Amino acid sequence: MTTDFIKLGVAGIQALQPYQAGKPIDELKREMGITEVIKLASNENPIGPGSKSLDAIREVLEDLALYPDGSGFALKHKLAEKFGLKADEITLGNGSSEIFTLLLRCYVTDQHEVVYSQHGFAMYSILTRSVGATPVVVPALNHGHDLDAMAAAINDKTALVFIANPNNPTGTYVTEDQIRAFMAKVPEHVIVVLDEAYAEYVEQADYADGLKLVDDYANLVVTRTFSKAYGLAALRIGYGVSNAAIADMMNRVREPFNVNSLALVAAEAALDDQVHLEKSRRVNHEGIQQLMAGFEKMGLEYIPTVGNFISVNVGRDAAPVYQELLRHGMIVRPIGGDYELPHYLRVTIGLPEQNRAFLDALAKVLA
Ligand SMILES: Cc1ncc(COP(=O)(O)O)c(C=O)c1O
View 1 (cartoon, rainbow, N blue to C red):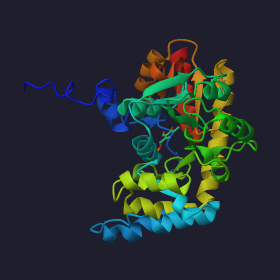
View 2: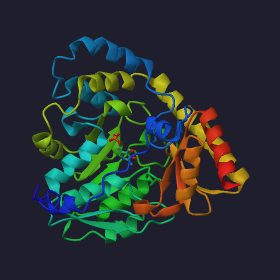
View 3: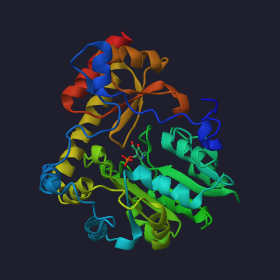
View 4: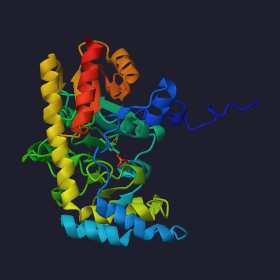
């Protein structure tokens, strides 16, 4: 082979590092020769999917030879009915992360800048650079978004702004008043993506529920997912809500059958499974209390969270602490590197016994 196929690639992609997913359970078992592993690293739902979703999947298993409904008619109408939206404002994606990809494809070129926050979700940087655009990373304020500084960072080249609300990995959130004040400063030709992957967990009354804001701002796109509170991460399904013209643009570039049949029916059933959603929230709420109490007992600082994860300051370089936790069969997430929180570990909220096992392992490692 004489051709350098990396150098042959598109400039933005040549310099990329792939997204680092949480370590798979089976990989750690193989590496350490252990059988008991707890993974609290990818913000997955510890109670799993709801029974209504599982029943719905069983019913369509016989139809696997058929392509899914490429328009997602039934799910879009269900979402529209449930959240007071119009079906033509909804775009279904193979995970909400596909909505980001579609938006970048439609609106961002190598001539543009994309604004997002320090400690922001890792995919924003990867996607921005993949289209050759310039990332503009705005320093965080108290670990969360500094929306005034983000508004000030917008210029003629800005095509898109990402705001994760709640933010991963810090668990911070912005209020409706803050979002409205921000949107008032953003020119209408700049697309604002309000990434609400963890919205269903938020209990705070002043939280900016994006689905209630989209009608007020033509350039606002809200994304949500079934991966977290609904417990369907493996199926890869999320959605965007925007004005119909933006949805029309995304529809032009999405793959014809980007969302599979199992995901479509499982998501539809999940929207009817209030009992499962409430249980997800309750387990999460109790888990946060349990972990905060544990951290306080150990004298560790943490960032107050509204998501299904919490980031804790271990008071030293967290990378070796993470490695040592692996030896105890405990997978969490170090958030140094691009996340720029080298003393922190992000822990997904688990079941009570998983949280307890994590706290015990952490105490041993830090002793
Ligand atoms: C902030 C944030 N946005 C989006 C996503 C993407 O979720 P999905 O593609 O599974 O819908 C994640 C996943 O962890 C996330 O943390």
